[in-house]
Image 1 (cartoon, one colour):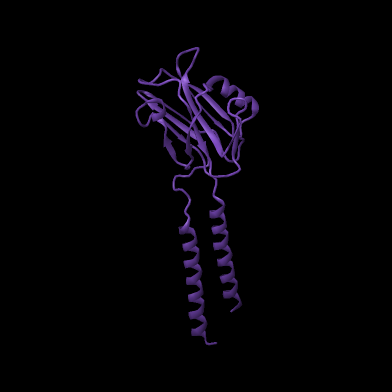
Image 2 (cartoon, rainbow, N blue to C red):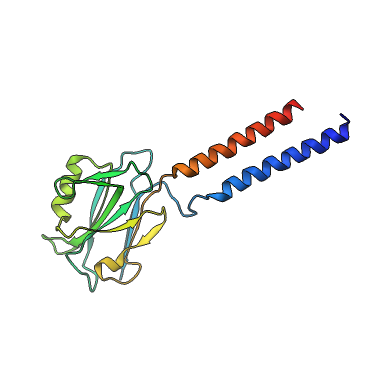
Length: 202
Protein backbone atom coordinates (compact mmCIF):
# COMPACT_ATOMS: atom_id res chain seq x y z
CA UNK A 1 0.00 0.00 0.00
CA UNK A 2 1.44 3.41 -0.97
CA UNK A 3 2.24 6.09 1.59
CA UNK A 4 -0.50 8.33 0.15
CA UNK A 5 -3.08 5.54 0.40
CA UNK A 6 -2.01 4.80 3.94
CA UNK A 7 -2.20 8.46 4.88
CA UNK A 8 -5.66 8.84 3.33
CA UNK A 9 -6.93 5.79 5.19
CA UNK A 10 -5.47 7.03 8.50
CA UNK A 11 -7.09 10.45 8.10
CA UNK A 12 -10.45 8.89 7.20
CA UNK A 13 -10.29 6.54 10.21
CA UNK A 14 -9.44 9.37 12.60
CA UNK A 15 -12.28 11.50 11.20
CA UNK A 16 -14.73 8.62 11.61
CA UNK A 17 -13.61 8.04 15.19
CA UNK A 18 -14.01 11.72 16.04
CA UNK A 19 -17.45 11.90 14.44
CA UNK A 20 -18.60 8.78 16.31
CA UNK A 21 -17.41 10.09 19.65
CA UNK A 22 -19.01 13.52 19.18
CA UNK A 23 -22.31 12.00 18.04
CA UNK A 24 -22.40 9.72 21.07
CA UNK A 25 -21.86 12.54 23.54
CA UNK A 26 -24.33 14.92 21.89
CA UNK A 27 -27.08 12.29 21.81
CA UNK A 28 -27.60 12.38 25.58
CA UNK A 29 -25.87 15.37 27.19
CA UNK A 30 -25.62 15.74 30.95
CA UNK A 31 -27.66 18.61 32.44
CA UNK A 32 -25.63 21.80 32.02
CA UNK A 33 -26.44 22.88 35.57
CA UNK A 34 -25.71 19.54 37.25
CA UNK A 35 -23.75 19.79 40.48
CA UNK A 36 -22.37 17.24 42.90
CA UNK A 37 -24.18 18.49 45.98
CA UNK A 38 -27.59 19.30 47.42
CA UNK A 39 -28.29 22.83 48.58
CA UNK A 40 -30.86 25.54 49.20
CA UNK A 41 -31.03 29.32 48.95
CA UNK A 42 -33.45 31.39 51.04
CA UNK A 43 -33.77 35.01 49.94
CA UNK A 44 -36.32 37.66 51.00
CA UNK A 45 -36.05 41.25 52.22
CA UNK A 46 -32.58 41.65 53.74
CA UNK A 47 -32.34 37.90 54.41
CA UNK A 48 -29.98 35.78 52.31
CA UNK A 49 -29.16 32.34 53.62
CA UNK A 50 -27.45 29.59 51.65
CA UNK A 51 -26.43 26.07 52.49
CA UNK A 52 -24.59 23.33 50.60
CA UNK A 53 -23.11 20.65 52.78
CA UNK A 54 -23.97 17.41 51.02
CA UNK A 55 -21.36 15.92 48.69
CA UNK A 56 -20.99 12.73 46.71
CA UNK A 57 -17.88 11.88 48.73
CA UNK A 58 -19.49 12.47 52.11
CA UNK A 59 -22.40 10.88 53.91
CA UNK A 60 -25.67 12.53 52.94
CA UNK A 61 -27.64 13.65 55.92
CA UNK A 62 -30.03 16.38 57.07
CA UNK A 63 -29.97 20.06 57.93
CA UNK A 64 -32.29 22.27 59.96
CA UNK A 65 -31.71 26.00 60.09
CA UNK A 66 -33.52 28.86 61.81
CA UNK A 67 -33.51 31.71 59.27
CA UNK A 68 -35.20 34.77 60.76
CA UNK A 69 -38.57 36.57 60.77
CA UNK A 70 -41.30 34.98 58.66
CA UNK A 71 -41.51 36.36 55.11
CA UNK A 72 -44.71 38.26 54.30
CA UNK A 73 -47.52 35.98 53.13
CA UNK A 74 -45.88 32.78 54.41
CA UNK A 75 -48.41 29.92 54.53
CA UNK A 76 -48.03 27.36 57.29
CA UNK A 77 -48.56 24.42 57.45
CA UNK A 78 -47.77 23.30 53.91
CA UNK A 79 -46.74 19.94 52.34
CA UNK A 80 -43.08 19.09 52.05
CA UNK A 81 -41.31 19.28 48.70
CA UNK A 82 -40.29 15.77 47.64
CA UNK A 83 -37.51 15.44 45.07
CA UNK A 84 -37.47 12.17 43.16
CA UNK A 85 -34.11 11.09 41.79
CA UNK A 86 -33.29 9.60 38.41
CA UNK A 87 -31.74 6.55 40.07
CA UNK A 88 -34.38 3.81 40.39
CA UNK A 89 -32.59 2.52 43.49
CA UNK A 90 -33.20 5.66 45.52
CA UNK A 91 -35.79 5.47 48.27
CA UNK A 92 -36.44 7.37 51.46
CA UNK A 93 -37.23 5.65 54.71
CA UNK A 94 -38.92 8.31 56.78
CA UNK A 95 -40.72 5.81 59.00
CA UNK A 96 -42.97 6.35 60.86
CA UNK A 97 -43.95 9.60 59.13
CA UNK A 98 -43.59 8.53 55.51
CA UNK A 99 -42.26 4.99 55.34
CA UNK A 100 -40.36 3.88 52.24
CA UNK A 101 -41.03 6.04 49.18
CA UNK A 102 -39.49 4.52 46.03
CA UNK A 103 -37.56 7.06 43.98
CA UNK A 104 -37.55 9.70 46.72
CA UNK A 105 -34.16 11.35 47.01
CA UNK A 106 -34.57 14.47 49.15
CA UNK A 107 -37.17 16.51 51.02
CA UNK A 108 -37.34 20.24 51.72
CA UNK A 109 -39.61 21.65 54.42
CA UNK A 110 -40.36 25.03 55.94
CA UNK A 111 -42.45 26.14 58.89
CA UNK A 112 -42.85 28.67 61.65
CA UNK A 113 -40.73 27.47 64.57
CA UNK A 114 -43.14 26.55 67.39
CA UNK A 115 -40.81 28.01 70.05
CA UNK A 116 -39.50 31.21 68.46
CA UNK A 117 -41.97 31.96 65.66
CA UNK A 118 -39.03 32.34 63.26
CA UNK A 119 -38.85 30.78 59.81
CA UNK A 120 -37.27 27.34 59.99
CA UNK A 121 -36.25 25.41 56.90
CA UNK A 122 -34.80 21.96 56.50
CA UNK A 123 -33.56 19.53 53.90
CA UNK A 124 -33.04 15.82 54.30
CA UNK A 125 -31.54 13.15 52.06
CA UNK A 126 -32.32 9.49 51.56
CA UNK A 127 -28.89 8.85 53.12
CA UNK A 128 -29.90 10.30 56.50
CA UNK A 129 -29.51 8.22 59.65
CA UNK A 130 -32.57 7.01 61.61
CA UNK A 131 -31.80 9.59 64.31
CA UNK A 132 -31.71 12.39 61.72
CA UNK A 133 -34.98 11.19 60.22
CA UNK A 134 -36.63 11.20 63.63
CA UNK A 135 -35.38 14.70 64.46
CA UNK A 136 -36.49 16.04 61.06
CA UNK A 137 -39.95 14.50 61.40
CA UNK A 138 -40.32 15.80 64.96
CA UNK A 139 -39.87 19.36 63.73
CA UNK A 140 -41.42 19.39 60.27
CA UNK A 141 -43.96 16.57 59.95
CA UNK A 142 -47.51 17.92 59.66
CA UNK A 143 -49.39 15.09 57.95
CA UNK A 144 -50.00 17.05 54.72
CA UNK A 145 -47.99 14.78 52.43
CA UNK A 146 -45.69 16.09 49.73
CA UNK A 147 -45.50 18.01 46.47
CA UNK A 148 -43.37 15.88 44.15
CA UNK A 149 -40.77 17.24 41.74
CA UNK A 150 -38.08 15.48 39.71
CA UNK A 151 -34.55 16.49 40.58
CA UNK A 152 -32.72 18.14 37.69
CA UNK A 153 -29.31 18.94 39.13
CA UNK A 154 -30.12 22.65 38.84
CA UNK A 155 -31.88 25.02 41.21
CA UNK A 156 -35.68 24.75 41.32
CA UNK A 157 -37.89 27.51 42.69
CA UNK A 158 -40.32 26.08 45.24
CA UNK A 159 -41.55 29.38 46.73
CA UNK A 160 -45.04 28.77 45.34
CA UNK A 161 -45.62 25.98 47.83
CA UNK A 162 -45.65 28.49 50.70
CA UNK A 163 -47.41 31.32 48.83
CA UNK A 164 -44.21 33.34 48.53
CA UNK A 165 -42.71 35.51 45.80
CA UNK A 166 -40.58 33.69 43.20
CA UNK A 167 -36.97 33.31 44.26
CA UNK A 168 -37.67 33.09 48.01
CA UNK A 169 -36.97 29.35 48.27
CA UNK A 170 -34.71 27.62 45.74
CA UNK A 171 -33.44 24.09 46.18
CA UNK A 172 -30.97 21.92 44.31
CA UNK A 173 -30.47 18.18 44.28
CA UNK A 174 -27.72 16.24 42.54
CA UNK A 175 -28.59 13.89 39.70
CA UNK A 176 -27.19 10.42 39.05
CA UNK A 177 -26.33 9.63 35.40
CA UNK A 178 -29.07 7.50 33.86
CA UNK A 179 -28.13 3.93 32.89
CA UNK A 180 -28.89 4.71 29.23
CA UNK A 181 -26.44 7.60 29.28
CA UNK A 182 -23.74 5.42 30.82
CA UNK A 183 -24.31 2.70 28.20
CA UNK A 184 -24.10 5.29 25.44
CA UNK A 185 -20.85 6.65 26.83
CA UNK A 186 -19.43 3.14 27.15
CA UNK A 187 -20.37 2.38 23.54
CA UNK A 188 -18.66 5.55 22.36
CA UNK A 189 -15.45 4.72 24.18
CA UNK A 190 -15.54 1.12 22.94
CA UNK A 191 -16.05 2.25 19.36
CA UNK A 192 -13.22 4.72 19.62
CA UNK A 193 -10.94 2.01 21.02
CA UNK A 194 -11.76 -0.41 18.19
CA UNK A 195 -11.09 2.21 15.52
CA UNK A 196 -7.85 3.21 17.18
CA UNK A 197 -6.74 -0.42 17.32
CA UNK A 198 -7.47 -0.87 13.61
CA UNK A 199 -5.55 2.27 12.84
CA UNK A 200 -2.53 0.99 14.78
CA UNK A 201 -2.55 -2.36 12.99
CA UNK A 202 -2.57 -0.77 9.50
